[in-house]
Length: 364
Ligand code: BTN
Image (cartoon, rainbow, N blue to C red; front, top):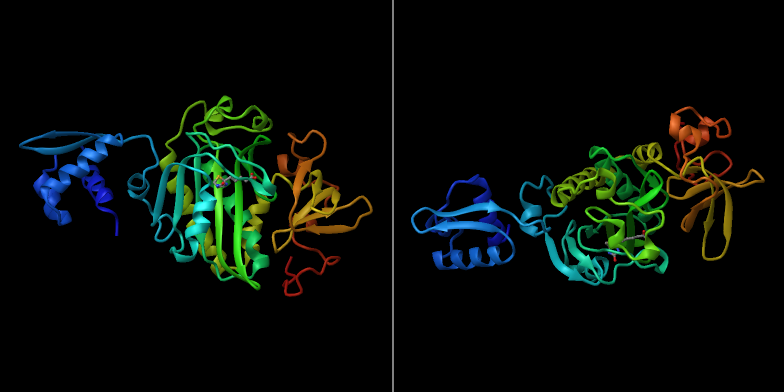
């Protein structure tokens, strides 16, 4: 059930520029006209422009450019994702908040923050989240084993890239958790899992999108190889609208995730992969692996063919492209297969040499 505040905003929006009386609103929502008056006062303080006349009632003139829950809820086409919204104008990290409430929250709950003061990235790095970004975390409770959780990060990257592409942006996925535009990072994803033995209790996926931000709003040390939607499109976007589209896309892919073999989602991820075909280096806590990315395994691991021809499966690590990394390899730029990579490898599933997934149906 939407909050009273959301219901008032929805009623005013539905009136589409016409006046709505306090009496009507009070009766519809089961509260007094005095209470309606108080809600309207607060909405005005929060940036809603609402005119009022004693005889006609209230009329919504404009809404604030903030990601208020009532704005996100209005016209949201999901059934689960984003149905429960926690909102902060400023907070440390949305992932920290989401983790602290996850056990008692319903699946699909989101924590939206206008500005983070302690945004966290992968591998202990910090994440810059100035005002104007799209910064949120979602709580999921999938019935999966711990080892399958990294699939969700890849799936989320696919969702962000799909929505960005619908905005005309040439978004691609950099393994394991970035979305790039023309080689520059535009979105980072931080997945954190709470598990008991091997069973996932909850997953928090934090998404930070450089939306209506200019690079100069970011700390200097974070500007390199980074871009923003505003810089790319030359204009700001409606962040609420973007978030609603993203929540819808995420819910659709999550339904797919829970109902069809991951292979199907993986092939979409592969089609938008910026990483496959590249020479690169992956730094893990105990070693550095260099070679060419030739695929992504069923579990979401990167498959790297090393110089000696051996293929290694890398589950996690920091991935750095070697040489002219802004230019994608021939195959992914043109659709013409790179002769160095066999068709079988480009399909991006483990091949015979790996035997990583004994249950893999082998239907390539
Ligand atoms: C990375 O690229 O290293 C991941 C960055 C993830 C940033 C998002 S912003 C929302 C959520 N809250 C955080 O503190 N981090 C994630």
